[in-house]
Image 1 (cartoon, rainbow, N blue to C red):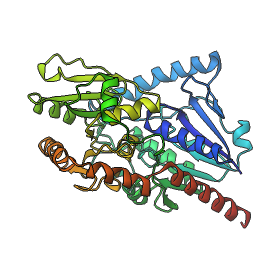
Image 2 (image 1 turned 180 degrees about the vertical axis):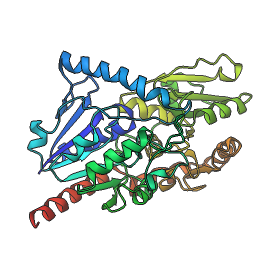
Image 3 (image 1 turned 90 degrees about the horizontal axis):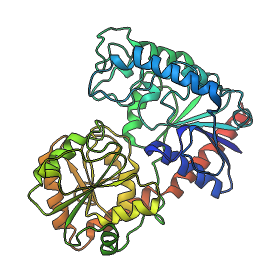
Image 4 (image 1 turned 180 degrees about the horizontal axis):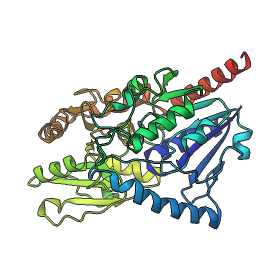
Length: 418
């Protein structure tokens, strides 16, 4: 069987990383897998093809980027979630040789103007869509906060300043409805939270929705000497080390940067070192931030593993998130996590006061209390052991990819009988 995966990015962002890991593992298992992307990471990766090429594409992309700013971006409220408009076709995809020869086409995160709904609707292949967020069934937002309009018909979007029923999310929802109302798309949900949202959505409520949890490689993300990890990063051995990872970490909205900053400020008087990986920098000059260290973008998995092992606790302060790779990676390394209840898919993996801590939603004081609880409860390493055991039982990359292979075979077998 020939599987083609479509993703905006390769090893960039949580969704792109998860996609590439699936693709790479399929190749290791002997499956004919190709990854077709809008933007590659710039390194030579196996069976990865970038579709954007040439000066004409760059000219079109620049024009439509300016168009998006003028007609769409200025209508978004300050502090709103990320939108992908995907209104105009940037590249030709359906006649690509990889698509023509594929047995199954798998969609992942295709925002940032990779594919339009019409392009997706015209793919005449069995399709799987692994949900990275809510964009496939909303009018344009990737996360909807408390808004449930996608359950009926988007429009009058609370994240826009227009206050019009027929705003661009209304038209965005309509375009998606027209594009895949007759498509047999199998929806794969990494978490129960996103599965429930998709099942209630007006666009996917009649589709087959299968839960396949995100997986990580426990042979890559594994416990190592905390002392050695801290020495390598020049971190005091006796310090309490709190880790956080996100793009633009101290300002990211949906990653809950404001709550992480409040935590830093509350713990300013204690012997804490705050480690942050991902793009961004500490542009706060307050004394509260003197113990904040940026590790930069850690693209090598061994560097990530080292950071997790250097930490006592990983903080996931997202207010709405699917099932972050970072939480799974940290737990695989035996580093317990703290996250908010009711924030998405983290409840699938974090068991309150068993392998981590689930704080009350947006309650920084409870998150700080969680740090104290883990430090006390984990003195003998019990919470760390439980965290890794959870990953080994339910969230390995091997289990995830085996489930995908079984799904591929099921879809191909059913297509032979119809």
